[in-house]
Image 1 (tube, rainbow, N blue to C red):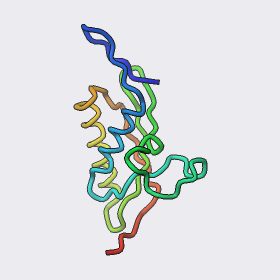
Image 2: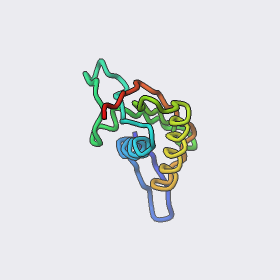
Image 3: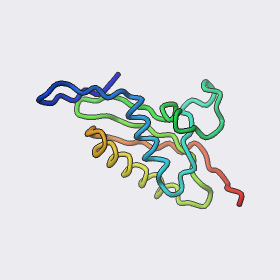
Image 4: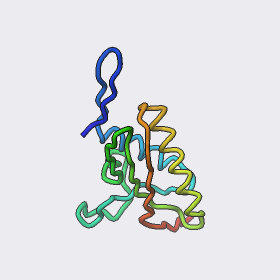
Length: 120
């Protein structure tokens, strides 16, 4: 499915993969987020951090009447406050969707799938 935006010149269709890429980029841009995780690790056979081209596997986009509902699967860094990192992800995702795509995010649910200990 795609989000349809009607303008005076016609209709703009934004595919869910585009939304997922914007959401993934916004999520991984936050301090404390190591990367994106697959939403179904057993089916996708992925136990590692998703690369930029696979962000759609870690994001669920659901169309609603007046916007979208987003579910983001992330991996956080050990030693960070998970609740604060999650709030920052929610705020940045909502901001980027509104400003980059003109799509309103009704809800942004963050699922922390793991904690990664970084070896320096």
